[in-house]
Length: 397
Ligand code: LMR
Image (cartoon, rainbow, N blue to C red; front, top):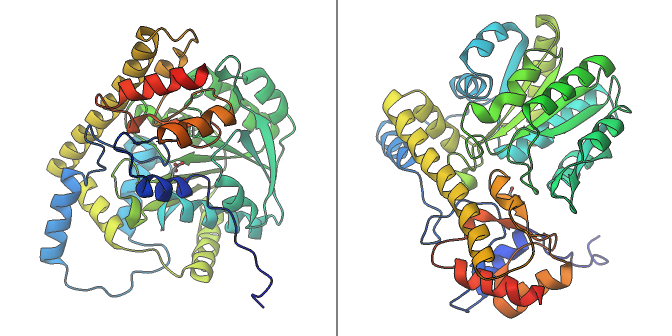
């Protein structure tokens, strides 16, 4: 059965992690996978996470099963985190949240669930989008369509073209939107653009599906949910998949959630039973440790404040690195205008280099980034920015 298989190429993002680790160049820089890094290049365990883990270890008395939906308190706190308290209250009878194995588990669970409700449903994804969206959604049976999003020439959103394409999305279709910190381009919808998307969703009847993987790393924990909350208050059906990987730094613990908003309580209850059965058929139930830690932080005012403060520092550090990179490129006499990087949000931006130029950065300079020239800005530091700028200058010729 397995004799005719041939090895696949490494995952374009995850493959870079292994290549970076194996590189002995002391100047190497990792701008690949989207993880936060401090000035020393480390991805720390956040203070509140450490403290919650310490408490958990001291007080946990059982590791018996929880269930396909995960912990109900975690689910409620996550719903409040993404919707805000007021909306969480007013939608109480219309919504359900499922704890999932990371954002990826949430995306896959949502896709499998949608495919049961509407087999082969069409989902419009932005061009470009995070590479893993395609297998996570497509392998579940959804049909992938795209809408134009990022204009590489002007480094801005092609909003008119996006809206023209979304005119083709109707009832039964879904439209995947990045809640904040667009991955891979860092260009986010403005508040007016979100309003226009809401109006189109209401007019055409498609179901918005928001991937919220970077809450708190763009403009702030509440600010980054502008689109989620605007749509949740207006549209009859909404899907939100959120992740705690980045904003709680619990990447390997796999902590995420799938939140569904329905038109009425009876639909929500029926949908909820189908989601539970779907989760049971894929992974039975999500891992507990990371979600319990997040639950403890969100439920304790002191830990929560400390988490928010550390998250703010992370966000401000990334935004400072954006400015630093742009300034240093300018100071080094690089002609090309990179100022757009300063205005983009979250961990990612495209440098706008060609694949051969990216390959030179990787092979000749040990600077690791994906072929699209997406960089994880958090991988830049005060200590490596000069080497990075000099290397970019060289490959630009
Ligand atoms: C990324 O885009 O680098 C992250 O979301 C990590 C991943 O799983 O690809």
